[in-house]
Length: 345
Image (cartoon, rainbow, N blue to C red):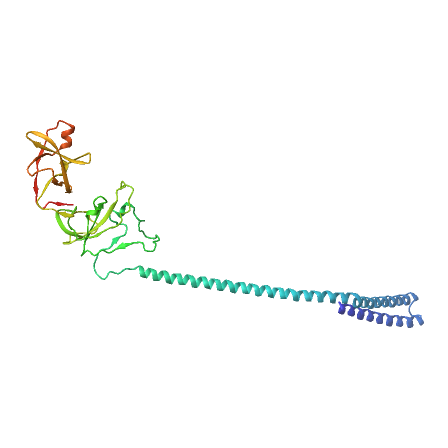
């Protein structure tokens, strides 16, 4: 603006000088009566007009320097300072964003390191999950439980599921040593002890028997299932003495455990005994009559019971006392006698 006003003054001054020179020339011509008075007056008017314009230009420059210039300087300096403050704010925001970006980078690097560590850990665990057999053998899935544990089955092992610590996944039995696991009722478990001999039969081989020996008797009953009827069953492990290649883990088996060995004792079928008023009664045939007689019993098995007193060898006893007492069914008799080396279980 200052330069523009200076240019206006210079231009007005040049116009004034030119108008003055023209007016002086016209005055000389007028003095010799070469031009008219009107032309001289017009040139004088141009001179006055140029003076006014020159003075106006000077006044505008003075007003600008007195008022507008300081005001513009103050405004521009204020804008300059505000721009400096804005620059500081921009730099502060840039530093904050840089710090945030560095923090995010550090967090992402930490997440990356954590993920890589997890990958390495999982790869190590996957590698540890590979089981390599050093010799031929048999692997049994954990879902193939024995008959007693199957009452409350564990969750089925399948691909993708999460297993807990200590959970059984597979078993690798030693088929060179076979074991029969049996369930014995709480009413008979007191008779079973370690080292007792047993005879084992396998459902898959009806005509074949194996010899066994009791190796473990559980001290606690097996967990009861929903269909147990409240009967507590104790697990008994019997080692098979003479296994062969036909035996496979998981086969159904039965065992007859020798809990007591009796020789030369009097024994009768267990169905011949009737319990009555806390007494053991059997019916004996004497002189074509049937006599009710109290007897004392000892050990018993599923089929025979040991008679300690009340009955003599060779006497005929009623074989079906319940049916005889309830109906007029013909009586069937059994001749009592010694049963040498009769075993009870």
